[in-house]
Image 1 (cartoon, rainbow, N blue to C red):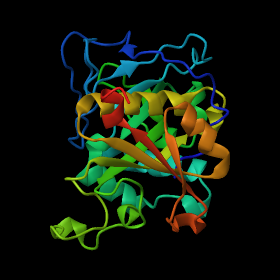
Image 2 (cartoon, rainbow, N blue to C red):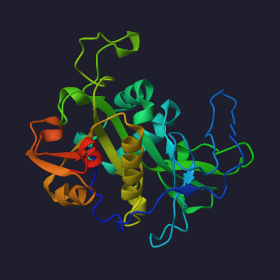
Image 3 (cartoon, one colour):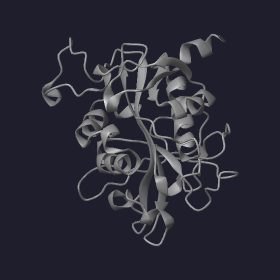
Length: 273
């Protein structure tokens, strides 16, 4: 579940900017196992899912890691699992099996914050660097490591439920239309299962960067009416500062319960409410 990021740095409204490393047009690099590496885009007027974006570092003390946002997919499952293990207590962690499921059935609902480094860089000392990949074929000595992430699915209820957090049985063989567990493609609520940032960079604002970028993407995409998540008492004000409403005690029992239902209303924002 969303981690304590209240000390993650300043709250500002900085917009995404193009990476200074961006190439003209789209560039795809493929490794020996056949997967496509990051697609790098030039700056344009609207952020796109999958776009490689360098984040502004002014005022955030990020000049040594230069983070950028990138959509996640199944090839990132080991990095996502390692980040989860580094961030959450065992009883609140998402299992690797759930990461495989969520990054297979709805990868477009997840977002990662990456940092590129060689073996001598600061990021190389983190727990996710072992799973890092080269950002493109032109820089084989550097690797892009996951430093923060948002992992989500969709549901048909207005808040997070225990069913929305479950793994449908035998999902690889197909899920029945009547199945209420796990991702619901027809749902209009995006359920955030994990907002995590590496503890190595606590105080850098990485959690806010990836969450604000994520909220902007979901809002502009038109695929949902709201974003819902669970938070413990100390984090309620943190999420309220991001625009979420506290709906009170949640009925969810995951991780021992004691959660608050937090909702960010997209539909009402568009109506000026």
